[in-house]
Amino acid sequence: MSGEVISQIEKIFHPRSIAVTGVSDKSDRLGNFLLFSFMDIGFKGNLYPVNPREDRVMGLRCYPSVREIEGPIDLVIISVHPKSVLDLIDDCVAKGVRAAVIFSSGFREKGEGGTRAEAEIVRRARSGGVRILGPNCMGLYSPSCGLSFFPGMPKEIGTVAFLSQSGSLAIMLGLFAGGRGVRFSKMISVGNSADLGVNEFLEYLGYDPETHLIVLYLEGLEDGGRFISLAKDISLKKPILLWKVGETEGGRKAAGSHTGSLSGSGEIWEAAIRQSGIIKVENLTELMGFITAFQNPYLPAGNQVAILSGPGGPAVSAADACEKEGLRLARLSPETKSKLAEFVPEFGASISNPVDLSLSSSFDQTLYPRATEVCGLDKNVDMIVEYISMLKKEMIEGIMRAQERARKPIAIITFMEYTTIESPLSRFFGYITREELTDLLLKMYRSGISVHATEQEAARVLASLLQYKRYLDSRNHL
Image 1 (cartoon, helix red, strand yellow):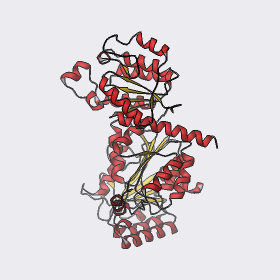
Image 2 (image 1 turned 180 degrees about the horizontal axis):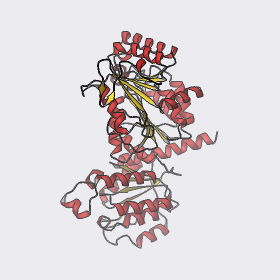
Image 3 (image 1 turned 60 degrees about the vertical axis):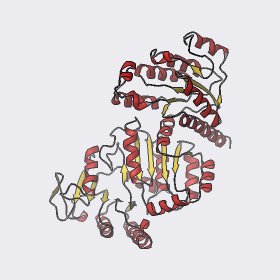
Image 4 (image 1 turned 90 degrees about the horizontal axis):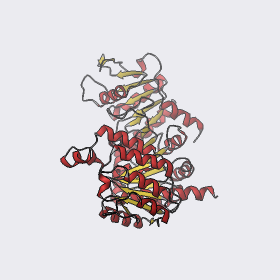
Protein backbone atom coordinates (compact mmCIF):
# COMPACT_ATOMS: atom_id res chain seq x y z
CA MET A 1 0.00 0.00 0.00
CA SER A 2 1.30 3.44 -0.89
CA GLY A 3 1.90 6.28 1.51
CA GLU A 4 -0.94 8.05 -0.29
CA VAL A 5 -3.52 5.61 1.11
CA ILE A 6 -2.14 6.00 4.65
CA SER A 7 -2.47 9.75 4.17
CA GLN A 8 -6.07 9.31 2.97
CA ILE A 9 -6.97 7.21 6.01
CA GLU A 10 -5.29 9.73 8.32
CA LYS A 11 -7.52 12.44 6.82
CA ILE A 12 -10.60 10.24 7.26
CA PHE A 13 -9.80 10.05 10.98
CA HIS A 14 -9.47 13.84 11.20
CA PRO A 15 -12.51 15.31 9.44
CA ARG A 16 -13.37 18.97 9.93
CA SER A 17 -16.96 18.45 8.82
CA ILE A 18 -19.36 15.49 8.77
CA ALA A 19 -22.70 15.09 6.99
CA VAL A 20 -25.08 12.51 8.43
CA THR A 21 -27.83 11.14 6.18
CA GLY A 22 -30.91 9.13 7.14
CA VAL A 23 -31.90 11.52 9.94
CA SER A 24 -35.45 12.52 10.83
CA ASP A 25 -37.52 14.32 13.44
CA LYS A 26 -38.40 10.81 14.61
CA SER A 27 -35.90 9.78 17.26
CA ASP A 28 -35.85 6.10 16.30
CA ARG A 29 -33.96 6.59 13.03
CA LEU A 30 -30.45 5.17 12.74
CA GLY A 31 -29.17 8.47 11.37
CA ASN A 32 -30.30 10.28 14.52
CA PHE A 33 -28.53 7.68 16.62
CA LEU A 34 -25.30 8.18 14.69
CA LEU A 35 -25.61 11.96 14.77
CA PHE A 36 -26.08 11.85 18.53
CA SER A 37 -22.97 9.66 18.85
CA PHE A 38 -20.84 12.44 17.36
CA MET A 39 -22.49 15.00 19.62
CA ASP A 40 -22.07 12.77 22.68
CA ILE A 41 -18.31 12.26 22.22
CA GLY A 42 -17.81 15.96 21.49
CA PHE A 43 -16.94 16.23 17.79
CA LYS A 44 -15.35 19.67 17.38
CA GLY A 45 -16.08 20.20 13.69
CA ASN A 46 -19.30 20.98 11.83
CA LEU A 47 -22.17 18.48 11.82
CA TYR A 48 -24.72 18.60 9.00
CA PRO A 49 -27.92 16.49 9.15
CA VAL A 50 -29.29 15.68 5.68
CA ASN A 51 -32.98 15.09 4.86
CA PRO A 52 -35.01 16.92 2.16
CA ARG A 53 -38.17 16.78 4.32
CA GLU A 54 -36.74 18.28 7.53
CA ASP A 55 -35.70 21.81 8.52
CA ARG A 56 -33.99 20.94 11.81
CA VAL A 57 -32.95 17.70 13.48
CA MET A 58 -31.70 17.48 17.07
CA GLY A 59 -31.29 21.26 17.19
CA LEU A 60 -29.15 21.44 14.03
CA ARG A 61 -30.09 22.92 10.65
CA CYS A 62 -31.00 20.12 8.23
CA TYR A 63 -30.02 20.23 4.56
CA PRO A 64 -31.96 18.81 1.57
CA SER A 65 -28.88 17.05 0.17
CA VAL A 66 -25.13 16.72 0.57
CA ARG A 67 -24.66 18.90 -2.52
CA GLU A 68 -26.51 21.81 -0.93
CA ILE A 69 -24.39 22.08 2.21
CA GLU A 70 -22.33 25.26 2.25
CA GLY A 71 -18.59 24.71 2.47
CA PRO A 72 -16.48 21.55 2.16
CA ILE A 73 -17.53 18.17 3.58
CA ASP A 74 -14.80 15.74 4.61
CA LEU A 75 -16.86 12.71 5.65
CA VAL A 76 -20.40 11.54 4.87
CA ILE A 77 -22.26 8.99 7.00
CA ILE A 78 -24.70 7.01 4.83
CA SER A 79 -27.51 5.27 6.69
CA VAL A 80 -30.33 5.02 4.15
CA HIS A 81 -32.13 2.27 2.22
CA PRO A 82 -29.60 0.37 0.06
CA LYS A 83 -31.39 1.49 -3.12
CA SER A 84 -30.59 5.13 -2.25
CA VAL A 85 -26.90 4.62 -1.54
CA LEU A 86 -25.75 5.01 -5.16
CA ASP A 87 -27.42 8.43 -5.48
CA LEU A 88 -25.70 9.56 -2.30
CA ILE A 89 -22.33 8.43 -3.67
CA ASP A 90 -22.99 10.57 -6.75
CA ASP A 91 -23.71 13.50 -4.42
CA CYS A 92 -20.44 12.87 -2.58
CA VAL A 93 -18.50 12.87 -5.87
CA ALA A 94 -20.18 16.10 -6.98
CA LYS A 95 -19.45 17.74 -3.63
CA GLY A 96 -15.80 16.67 -3.56
CA VAL A 97 -16.17 14.58 -0.39
CA ARG A 98 -13.06 12.67 0.71
CA ALA A 99 -14.73 9.59 2.21
CA ALA A 100 -18.04 7.98 3.07
CA VAL A 101 -18.98 5.44 5.72
CA ILE A 102 -21.81 3.22 4.48
CA PHE A 103 -23.78 1.82 7.40
CA SER A 104 -26.47 0.53 5.04
CA SER A 105 -26.52 -3.24 4.53
CA GLY A 106 -28.06 -5.42 1.83
CA PHE A 107 -25.13 -5.79 -0.56
CA ARG A 108 -22.53 -8.54 -1.05
CA GLU A 109 -23.78 -10.43 1.97
CA LYS A 110 -27.17 -10.82 0.22
CA GLY A 111 -25.92 -12.59 -2.88
CA GLU A 112 -25.21 -11.90 -6.55
CA GLY A 113 -27.49 -8.88 -6.96
CA GLY A 114 -26.05 -7.21 -3.88
CA THR A 115 -22.52 -7.96 -5.07
CA ARG A 116 -23.18 -6.16 -8.38
CA ALA A 117 -24.68 -3.16 -6.58
CA GLU A 118 -21.71 -2.98 -4.22
CA ALA A 119 -19.25 -3.12 -7.12
CA GLU A 120 -21.03 -0.23 -8.87
CA ILE A 121 -20.90 1.88 -5.70
CA VAL A 122 -17.14 1.36 -5.46
CA ARG A 123 -16.63 2.06 -9.17
CA ARG A 124 -18.41 5.41 -9.02
CA ALA A 125 -16.80 6.38 -5.73
CA ARG A 126 -13.26 5.63 -6.89
CA SER A 127 -13.77 7.40 -10.21
CA GLY A 128 -14.76 10.49 -8.23
CA GLY A 129 -11.98 10.28 -5.64
CA VAL A 130 -14.20 9.11 -2.73
CA ARG A 131 -12.90 6.36 -0.42
CA ILE A 132 -15.50 3.96 1.03
CA LEU A 133 -15.67 2.28 4.44
CA GLY A 134 -18.25 -0.50 4.42
CA PRO A 135 -20.96 -1.09 3.43
CA ASN A 136 -22.63 -3.01 6.24
CA CYS A 137 -20.42 -1.51 8.96
CA MET A 138 -20.51 0.73 12.02
CA GLY A 139 -17.64 2.95 10.93
CA LEU A 140 -15.09 4.72 13.10
CA TYR A 141 -14.48 5.49 16.74
CA SER A 142 -11.58 7.65 17.88
CA PRO A 143 -11.82 9.70 21.07
CA SER A 144 -8.87 11.94 20.11
CA CYS A 145 -10.61 12.82 16.82
CA GLY A 146 -14.14 13.11 18.20
CA LEU A 147 -15.49 10.19 16.15
CA SER A 148 -17.96 7.65 17.49
CA PHE A 149 -20.56 5.17 16.25
CA PHE A 150 -22.40 4.64 19.55
CA PRO A 151 -23.39 6.92 22.45
CA GLY A 152 -21.60 6.37 25.75
CA MET A 153 -18.27 5.24 24.31
CA PRO A 154 -15.32 6.25 26.53
CA LYS A 155 -14.01 9.76 25.86
CA GLU A 156 -10.56 8.99 27.29
CA ILE A 157 -7.80 8.21 24.80
CA GLY A 158 -6.06 4.84 24.98
CA THR A 159 -3.40 2.89 23.09
CA VAL A 160 -5.43 -0.15 21.90
CA ALA A 161 -6.84 -0.27 18.36
CA PHE A 162 -9.64 -2.66 17.39
CA LEU A 163 -10.14 -3.58 13.72
CA SER A 164 -13.28 -5.63 13.21
CA GLN A 165 -15.45 -7.21 10.55
CA SER A 166 -18.34 -7.05 13.03
CA GLY A 167 -19.88 -3.71 13.95
CA SER A 168 -21.89 -4.97 16.89
CA LEU A 169 -18.80 -6.59 18.41
CA ALA A 170 -16.95 -3.28 18.18
CA ILE A 171 -19.75 -1.66 20.20
CA MET A 172 -19.80 -4.49 22.73
CA LEU A 173 -16.04 -4.42 23.22
CA GLY A 174 -15.93 -0.64 23.51
CA LEU A 175 -18.55 -0.53 26.24
CA PHE A 176 -17.53 -3.76 27.97
CA ALA A 177 -13.83 -2.90 27.99
CA GLY A 178 -14.46 0.70 28.99
CA GLY A 179 -15.94 -0.42 32.29
CA ARG A 180 -12.87 -2.55 32.93
CA GLY A 181 -10.25 0.13 32.50
CA VAL A 182 -9.30 -0.50 28.85
CA ARG A 183 -9.12 2.58 26.61
CA PHE A 184 -8.88 2.67 22.83
CA SER A 185 -6.98 4.80 20.34
CA LYS A 186 -9.22 3.78 17.47
CA MET A 187 -11.93 1.31 16.50
CA ILE A 188 -12.67 0.45 12.88
CA SER A 189 -15.65 -1.58 11.71
CA VAL A 190 -14.94 -2.45 8.06
CA GLY A 191 -18.03 -4.53 7.26
CA ASN A 192 -17.90 -5.80 3.67
CA SER A 193 -14.60 -3.99 2.95
CA ALA A 194 -15.71 -3.10 -0.55
CA ASP A 195 -12.97 -0.46 -0.86
CA LEU A 196 -10.87 0.19 2.24
CA GLY A 197 -10.53 -3.03 4.17
CA VAL A 198 -8.57 -5.00 6.75
CA ASN A 199 -5.18 -4.79 5.04
CA GLU A 200 -5.37 -1.03 4.43
CA PHE A 201 -6.37 -0.26 8.00
CA LEU A 202 -3.93 -2.79 9.46
CA GLU A 203 -1.05 -1.04 7.72
CA TYR A 204 -2.37 2.32 8.88
CA LEU A 205 -2.53 1.13 12.50
CA GLY A 206 1.03 -0.12 12.20
CA TYR A 207 1.96 3.47 11.40
CA ASP A 208 -0.42 5.21 13.83
CA PRO A 209 1.58 6.71 16.74
CA GLU A 210 -1.46 6.56 19.07
CA THR A 211 -1.72 2.78 18.74
CA HIS A 212 0.55 0.41 20.70
CA LEU A 213 -1.57 -2.78 20.49
CA ILE A 214 -3.67 -3.98 17.55
CA VAL A 215 -6.66 -6.26 18.10
CA LEU A 216 -8.43 -7.97 15.18
CA TYR A 217 -11.77 -9.72 14.78
CA LEU A 218 -11.81 -11.47 11.39
CA GLU A 219 -14.26 -13.70 9.58
CA GLY A 220 -12.19 -13.96 6.41
CA LEU A 221 -9.89 -12.20 3.95
CA GLU A 222 -9.50 -12.00 0.19
CA ASP A 223 -5.78 -11.16 0.18
CA GLY A 224 -4.31 -13.37 2.89
CA GLY A 225 -0.79 -13.12 1.50
CA ARG A 226 -0.75 -9.37 1.91
CA PHE A 227 -2.17 -9.73 5.42
CA ILE A 228 0.59 -12.14 6.50
CA SER A 229 3.30 -9.92 5.03
CA LEU A 230 1.94 -6.89 6.90
CA ALA A 231 1.53 -8.79 10.18
CA LYS A 232 5.11 -10.12 10.07
CA ASP A 233 6.52 -6.61 10.00
CA ILE A 234 4.01 -4.88 12.26
CA SER A 235 4.36 -7.57 14.95
CA LEU A 236 7.98 -6.53 15.39
CA LYS A 237 6.77 -3.10 16.57
CA LYS A 238 3.33 -3.76 18.04
CA PRO A 239 1.65 -6.95 19.29
CA ILE A 240 -1.31 -8.17 17.23
CA LEU A 241 -4.13 -10.14 18.86
CA LEU A 242 -6.50 -12.05 16.58
CA TRP A 243 -9.95 -13.48 17.23
CA LYS A 244 -10.57 -15.52 14.08
CA VAL A 245 -13.97 -17.08 13.48
CA GLY A 246 -15.47 -19.00 10.59
CA GLU A 247 -13.04 -21.92 10.84
CA THR A 248 -15.72 -24.64 10.75
CA GLU A 249 -18.18 -25.31 7.95
CA GLY A 250 -21.00 -23.77 9.94
CA GLY A 251 -18.86 -20.79 10.88
CA ARG A 252 -17.84 -20.22 7.24
CA LYS A 253 -21.49 -20.17 6.15
CA ALA A 254 -22.34 -17.70 8.91
CA ALA A 255 -19.42 -15.46 7.92
CA GLY A 256 -20.57 -15.46 4.31
CA SER A 257 -24.05 -14.28 5.24
CA HIS A 258 -22.67 -11.72 7.70
CA THR A 259 -20.06 -9.81 5.69
CA GLY A 260 -19.57 -11.87 2.55
CA SER A 261 -16.05 -12.85 3.68
CA LEU A 262 -13.86 -15.64 2.37
CA SER A 263 -12.95 -17.30 5.63
CA GLY A 264 -10.56 -20.07 4.54
CA SER A 265 -9.66 -23.22 6.45
CA GLY A 266 -8.58 -23.34 10.06
CA GLU A 267 -5.32 -25.08 9.09
CA ILE A 268 -4.34 -22.26 6.73
CA TRP A 269 -5.02 -19.65 9.38
CA GLU A 270 -3.07 -21.55 12.03
CA ALA A 271 -0.04 -21.66 9.71
CA ALA A 272 -0.38 -17.95 8.97
CA ILE A 273 -0.55 -17.11 12.66
CA ARG A 274 2.56 -19.14 13.50
CA GLN A 275 4.71 -17.38 10.91
CA SER A 276 3.51 -13.82 11.49
CA GLY A 277 3.85 -13.32 15.25
CA ILE A 278 0.11 -12.98 15.80
CA ILE A 279 -1.37 -14.03 19.15
CA LYS A 280 -4.66 -15.92 18.80
CA VAL A 281 -7.62 -15.72 21.20
CA GLU A 282 -10.83 -17.75 21.23
CA ASN A 283 -13.63 -15.59 22.64
CA LEU A 284 -14.61 -12.17 23.98
CA THR A 285 -13.77 -12.90 27.62
CA GLU A 286 -10.34 -14.23 26.72
CA LEU A 287 -9.79 -11.29 24.40
CA MET A 288 -10.33 -8.88 27.28
CA GLY A 289 -7.74 -10.65 29.41
CA PHE A 290 -5.18 -10.68 26.60
CA ILE A 291 -5.71 -6.99 25.91
CA THR A 292 -4.85 -6.17 29.51
CA ALA A 293 -1.65 -8.22 29.29
CA PHE A 294 -0.41 -6.92 25.94
CA GLN A 295 -1.09 -3.19 26.40
CA ASN A 296 2.26 -2.59 28.09
CA PRO A 297 3.82 -6.04 28.14
CA TYR A 298 6.86 -7.16 30.07
CA LEU A 299 8.14 -10.11 28.06
CA PRO A 300 9.50 -13.09 30.03
CA ALA A 301 13.00 -14.40 29.54
CA GLY A 302 11.86 -18.00 30.05
CA ASN A 303 8.99 -20.21 31.19
CA GLN A 304 9.59 -20.33 34.96
CA VAL A 305 6.58 -19.09 36.95
CA ALA A 306 6.04 -18.26 40.62
CA ILE A 307 2.51 -18.56 42.03
CA LEU A 308 1.32 -16.45 44.97
CA SER A 309 -2.00 -17.18 46.63
CA GLY A 310 -3.94 -16.78 49.83
CA PRO A 311 -6.35 -19.67 49.28
CA GLY A 312 -4.51 -22.98 48.85
CA GLY A 313 -6.81 -24.85 46.45
CA PRO A 314 -6.74 -22.25 43.65
CA ALA A 315 -2.93 -22.21 43.82
CA VAL A 316 -2.86 -25.92 42.99
CA SER A 317 -5.27 -25.34 40.10
CA ALA A 318 -3.10 -22.47 38.87
CA ALA A 319 -0.07 -24.75 38.92
CA ASP A 320 -1.95 -27.28 36.78
CA ALA A 321 -3.02 -24.57 34.34
CA CYS A 322 0.55 -23.27 33.97
CA GLU A 323 2.00 -26.73 33.40
CA LYS A 324 -0.60 -27.46 30.70
CA GLU A 325 0.51 -24.33 28.83
CA GLY A 326 4.16 -25.35 28.85
CA LEU A 327 5.17 -23.22 31.84
CA ARG A 328 7.10 -24.64 34.78
CA LEU A 329 7.04 -23.88 38.50
CA ALA A 330 10.18 -21.94 39.32
CA ARG A 331 12.57 -23.33 41.93
CA LEU A 332 12.84 -20.41 44.35
CA SER A 333 16.38 -19.63 45.48
CA PRO A 334 17.39 -20.16 49.14
CA GLU A 335 17.75 -16.37 49.48
CA THR A 336 14.18 -15.84 48.25
CA LYS A 337 12.82 -18.40 50.69
CA SER A 338 14.73 -16.82 53.52
CA LYS A 339 13.29 -13.40 52.76
CA LEU A 340 9.75 -14.82 52.45
CA ALA A 341 10.13 -16.51 55.83
CA GLU A 342 10.67 -13.09 57.43
CA PHE A 343 7.06 -11.99 56.84
CA VAL A 344 4.95 -14.92 55.60
CA PRO A 345 2.88 -16.30 58.53
CA GLU A 346 4.39 -19.35 60.17
CA PHE A 347 1.14 -21.33 60.30
CA GLY A 348 -1.31 -22.05 57.45
CA ALA A 349 1.20 -20.82 54.90
CA SER A 350 4.14 -22.00 52.77
CA ILE A 351 7.28 -20.41 51.33
CA SER A 352 7.65 -23.07 48.66
CA ASN A 353 6.31 -22.46 45.15
CA PRO A 354 3.29 -22.03 45.03
CA VAL A 355 3.77 -19.50 47.84
CA ASP A 356 0.81 -19.75 50.23
CA LEU A 357 0.26 -16.40 51.98
CA SER A 358 -2.60 -17.86 54.05
CA LEU A 359 -5.87 -16.22 55.01
CA SER A 360 -3.85 -13.42 56.58
CA SER A 361 -3.39 -11.96 53.08
CA SER A 362 -7.05 -10.86 53.19
CA PHE A 363 -6.29 -8.66 56.20
CA ASP A 364 -2.63 -7.70 55.84
CA GLN A 365 -2.39 -5.71 52.60
CA THR A 366 1.42 -5.78 52.65
CA LEU A 367 1.79 -9.54 52.12
CA TYR A 368 1.12 -9.65 48.37
CA PRO A 369 3.31 -6.60 47.53
CA ARG A 370 6.24 -7.87 49.61
CA ALA A 371 5.99 -11.40 48.19
CA THR A 372 5.68 -9.98 44.66
CA GLU A 373 8.90 -8.02 45.01
CA VAL A 374 10.86 -10.83 46.63
CA CYS A 375 9.81 -13.43 44.04
CA GLY A 376 10.04 -10.93 41.18
CA LEU A 377 13.69 -10.24 41.96
CA ASP A 378 14.55 -13.95 42.02
CA LYS A 379 16.61 -14.76 38.90
CA ASN A 380 14.94 -18.16 38.74
CA VAL A 381 11.50 -16.52 38.24
CA ASP A 382 10.44 -15.30 34.78
CA MET A 383 6.78 -14.46 35.52
CA ILE A 384 4.30 -14.35 38.38
CA VAL A 385 0.69 -15.52 38.83
CA GLU A 386 -1.20 -14.09 41.80
CA TYR A 387 -4.56 -15.40 43.01
CA ILE A 388 -6.21 -12.56 44.94
CA SER A 389 -9.72 -12.98 46.34
CA MET A 390 -10.51 -9.26 46.50
CA LEU A 391 -8.69 -6.29 45.01
CA LYS A 392 -7.84 -3.53 47.47
CA LYS A 393 -6.39 -0.15 46.63
CA GLU A 394 -3.39 -0.21 48.99
CA MET A 395 -2.54 -3.80 48.05
CA ILE A 396 -2.62 -3.15 44.29
CA GLU A 397 -0.61 0.05 44.63
CA GLY A 398 1.98 -1.96 46.56
CA ILE A 399 2.09 -4.63 43.83
CA MET A 400 2.58 -1.90 41.22
CA ARG A 401 5.53 -0.53 43.17
CA ALA A 402 6.98 -4.05 43.32
CA GLN A 403 6.48 -4.36 39.57
CA GLU A 404 8.59 -1.24 39.02
CA ARG A 405 11.51 -3.17 40.50
CA ALA A 406 10.75 -6.68 39.20
CA ARG A 407 9.77 -5.70 35.62
CA LYS A 408 8.41 -9.15 34.86
CA PRO A 409 4.92 -10.13 33.64
CA ILE A 410 2.37 -10.37 36.46
CA ALA A 411 -1.05 -11.96 35.89
CA ILE A 412 -3.65 -11.55 38.64
CA ILE A 413 -6.63 -13.87 39.00
CA THR A 414 -9.50 -12.33 40.93
CA PHE A 415 -13.27 -12.17 41.36
CA MET A 416 -13.14 -8.59 40.14
CA GLU A 417 -16.89 -7.95 40.13
CA TYR A 418 -17.23 -9.08 43.76
CA THR A 419 -14.72 -6.44 44.78
CA THR A 420 -17.33 -3.73 44.09
CA ILE A 421 -20.44 -5.45 45.50
CA GLU A 422 -21.62 -4.42 48.94
CA SER A 423 -22.33 -7.47 51.07
CA PRO A 424 -21.61 -8.45 54.69
CA LEU A 425 -18.39 -10.22 53.64
CA SER A 426 -17.18 -7.51 51.24
CA ARG A 427 -17.95 -4.81 53.82
CA PHE A 428 -15.86 -6.75 56.31
CA PHE A 429 -12.89 -6.99 53.95
CA GLY A 430 -13.39 -3.51 52.48
CA TYR A 431 -15.02 -3.30 49.04
CA ILE A 432 -14.27 -0.49 46.55
CA THR A 433 -16.54 1.45 44.20
CA ARG A 434 -16.82 0.67 40.50
CA GLU A 435 -15.13 4.00 39.68
CA GLU A 436 -12.23 3.22 42.02
CA LEU A 437 -11.85 -0.22 40.47
CA THR A 438 -11.78 1.20 36.92
CA ASP A 439 -9.10 3.67 37.95
CA LEU A 440 -7.08 0.89 39.60
CA LEU A 441 -7.32 -1.28 36.49
CA LEU A 442 -6.12 1.55 34.25
CA LYS A 443 -3.06 1.98 36.46
CA MET A 444 -2.41 -1.76 36.60
CA TYR A 445 -2.49 -2.22 32.83
CA ARG A 446 -0.10 0.70 32.38
CA SER A 447 2.22 -1.04 34.84
CA GLY A 448 2.22 -4.30 32.88
CA ILE A 449 -0.10 -6.13 35.29
CA SER A 450 -3.02 -8.00 33.74
CA VAL A 451 -6.25 -9.20 35.37
CA HIS A 452 -8.06 -12.45 34.57
CA ALA A 453 -11.16 -14.36 35.56
CA THR A 454 -9.57 -17.82 35.65
CA GLU A 455 -6.20 -19.43 36.17
CA GLN A 456 -6.47 -21.08 32.74
CA GLU A 457 -6.76 -17.68 31.07
CA ALA A 458 -3.87 -16.26 33.10
CA ALA A 459 -1.66 -19.20 32.15
CA ARG A 460 -2.53 -18.84 28.46
CA VAL A 461 -1.70 -15.14 28.57
CA LEU A 462 1.71 -15.75 30.12
CA ALA A 463 2.44 -18.51 27.62
CA SER A 464 1.44 -16.14 24.81
CA LEU A 465 3.75 -13.43 26.10
CA LEU A 466 6.56 -15.99 25.96
CA GLN A 467 5.46 -17.02 22.46
CA TYR A 468 5.61 -13.39 21.32
CA LYS A 469 9.05 -12.92 22.91
CA ARG A 470 10.35 -15.96 21.04
CA TYR A 471 8.93 -14.61 17.77
CA LEU A 472 10.76 -11.31 18.27
CA ASP A 473 13.97 -13.16 19.13
CA SER A 474 13.70 -15.37 16.04
CA ARG A 475 13.17 -12.39 13.72
CA ASN A 476 15.97 -10.37 15.30
CA HIS A 477 18.38 -13.25 14.70
CA LEU A 478 17.65 -13.34 10.97
